[in-house]
Image 1: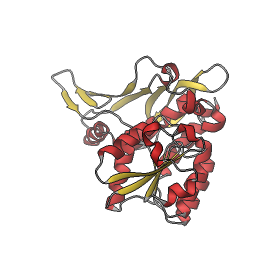
Image 2: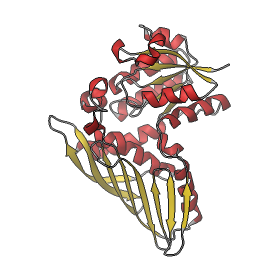
Image 3: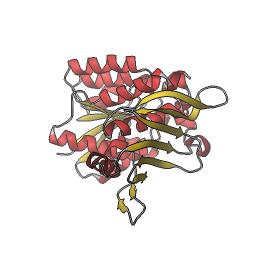
Length: 309
């Protein structure tokens, strides 16, 4: 039997990525699509649109919550009360405190839930984790991480997705939205970073389009850069060591030691991988009860300094 998915909220840029995964996976099926604004439901899935969120939840085995951030806690709580496993876009809520309250409510019902942190599913990041654990780079001197796209320039964040540029609804701006992924990627490499200072690229009319931050990964200096207004999109992660340097660009990991070096090529970042991983863990019954914890921890780190600049 296919796993039937209810899509709650359709005005998010990653909706098309999730729909592509549902179409590609033979044991996934779209059961229903709901949005508070019915015009936000994409035309190709208009036949799955329902007017009531409870109907959408009832038709599905699991839910994917892509609604605006200010709506996510209520929608997740409804799905949890119905016993439906949840994949929710990040940030889980406008503030980490609100997200923690939601996580406690979900935990009381023992409903599995996960946040859509797709960079941690990146094969090249797993390869880099192995390189660090093996000590191949030698003593680490510094880490630089950048994640960017041009969504604020090319119209991706206009129209139905325009809520993402309103901090009152989204909870974060461009820096928080993408830096949350970078913070979580560093956590997946072994430990959460600390952010000491930030400089934001302020947008006209409020909010931000991105920014840069400095901090520490244990005792190692870290620089994070994230932007919605970059001409060159992609993920870059550089780890400088005494014996070699690791450069991860999208899905490619290169180890340079002054000689021939090594190159490993894998798939690039794709938001749909969060759903693919969620479905795999749902099938294997390995979804964690505290699956929202990584996203909440990353949001707390950003709130301490970055989002109050």
